Length: 602
Ligand code: GLA
Image (cartoon, rainbow, N blue to C red; front, side):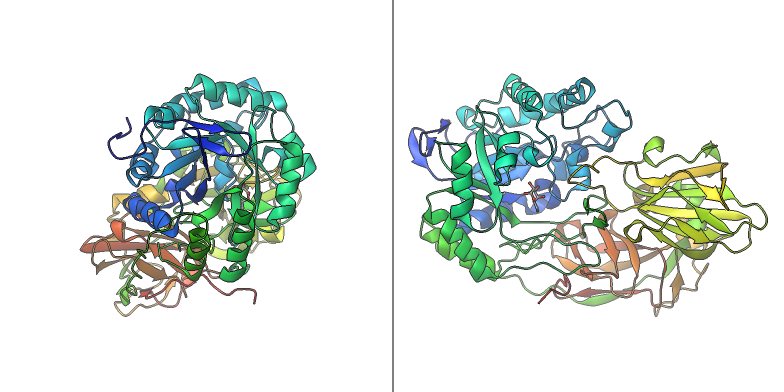
């Protein structure tokens, strides 16, 4: 139950003829997005507090269904997924909340929030009123909505609005689906007004909503024009930009997106001058920890990077930026803003760590799973094996004189080995499907799911190696496939590191070279609670963990060359593990004073 002692008092929130009405009085929503699942839970209160200090009165969050339900039937609400606690902290700050439970959320999040298991039955029709899909959505809402419903404003909680779907007009036009979602929300006890959001085009606004839902728009500029379009589709009621895009996200291999603080503040001012309500997307972006990033694919696959800093007013590490100060000045014109400013953080500690222990992925295989237990005649996707994120190893035998290996598609990146020796890489973003092979017997492919598409028709597609697999034009069968539980391996603290410290590339205390794919491990002292930035320069491509917490992916394609380490994951004595997929000239890892999110385009 919500803590009713500190938050807003029980009240009423409604859509009036011209304004939102809070207890019957006009109320302008000044919201900013914080995705609880992208921020360490020990930082939630800090980020919410800083939102209020900037002049916001409301926090908006999506709910990521796949994070809560990695397997069907489960609904994890612990730690970083404790939505109830997040909403209670918003109430404790005296702020209101907007919840956007999807089921589809987009958000540059893996699969747009839809669980991978949803797609294993081809009969399931997602994002439309299809019975199998709606049954799964109903299970999700059964577990989620009690948390939200009990924290609505009419029960003394902070929740004032709940959104139906997300930019549905950009995807479909099944009104009966939207209607079914409304009914599930109402049946689940949601009493606050329900909204939809769409990009302000006539087609999307027409397709993405229902007459009884309050329409809002998503845009980051030209407010007057966009609000006029929205008004054509909604003759009365408050106008709201429910995603004011004040920054943008980054793809691997592209530049780091930034927008000028002055220009963004001017656009915000223009929007607020119309009297409209707003939700900043994002107030603080956070991080795609672990394997949680999404991807885009409009002909070329573009996975989203680990940082979701978004060039938002509050940085990924919770730092006040020039945009924060500029927005605060704008907001002060429209609502009371306290004089208190969050203190700038001290530069992060800088030091290096020698990763003295290593184990190659080949030596680690017995602890990553048992290859021999899953022999399969035909090539299965990772999904078919119940693996919806991360890595899998595919193994087959080569006939003598095999020359050319081909697949239907590689999703998303496969390192190819023959008898343990690296042959090359097949990358989806290069449309690679074919590779020449040297002579040898044992064929291995280490395949990475680089994040599922979160926008458009390619959501939900299978990952892994997609058939047909052919060798010199003839079907290659006799596969063994092993989903790799790398998180479990790191958390278990394998003794193999000690047993084979010098295999496949000697690792010395001064940081000698290491040939991947291999895990490297080292220990370091730190001050618990103090954020760090791990430099990944020189480590090529891979994944990093501290004390078992998966910091996310890194890649020398950039743009980012540091990974954010939230202070709460640190202890006095810490363990750093890096999965180095290709190799590094030095196994010294360094921590830098500032994040480096990479080059910009100007
Ligand atoms: C749209 C979506 C969001 C997000 C932004 C881009 O507005 O609704 O989830 O994907 O685009 O960051």
